[in-house]
Image 1 (cartoon, rainbow, N blue to C red):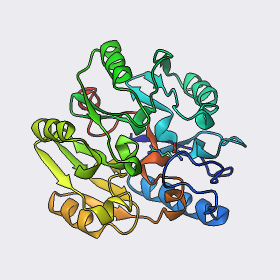
Image 2: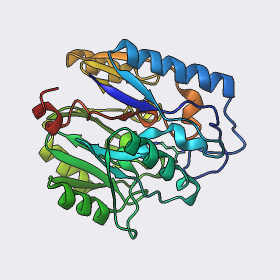
Image 3: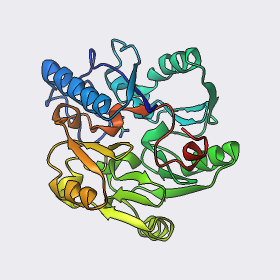
Image 4: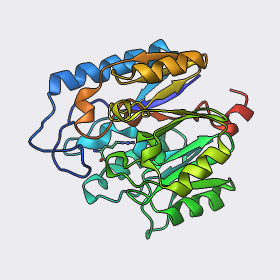
Length: 276
Ligand code: ARG
């Protein structure tokens, strides 16, 4: 059963600026944010997911972005070590929740920043891992060694697409969505060599966070305003679902950022082998 961790937006807001999307002068509308979050939850449940809830905490407005909490690998959770100090207070809450729910916690060494599933996504056997802006390449190498898995570190060069999940989304082993302008040339060559079926998102839809999609079986949930991507997904046999998430774009997040898949993403090779 697909299981997803979400955190209700009770204390969500734009209280600081740690990426180019955030401006304290562009506040989010609390009621609208709650509505959009509930609609996303409904879309995910409609696709067959069970939603687990992380209790919201006052003073931690970005806790809603559970993708950053940790990287999940079987019953292991590699906790985030946030680059911006504004988000570091989230980790003890997440750690407590994950421990209480049976995960074995691991931490990257202190000298590395690591922002969880926001920057590390399995595509088949390989952990594709974004670095430079919010996570460190050597931290990804450390994780790969620790878990005994292959890693493909890819450099992110566009500050607007500061987490890997803003510009890349594995659909199934061998297939992914991506926005090429977010990556350096070497990363692009590596992605193209490793992943035979890459669906390219255009600049306008990338700015709607088209790549920040949640995949549940054949359903792919995104923000509204991504018609080209949705047409391409249909041609590939997926069922795209649009749900408006503009209040969360104001913080630099969308569908995928608001979720953490606790049983492993559909595209993860290890999950498919565990026979779920
Ligand atoms: N305001 C948050 C930050 O900058 C947004 C996080 C979005 N999460 C993601 N997985 N891309 O950290």
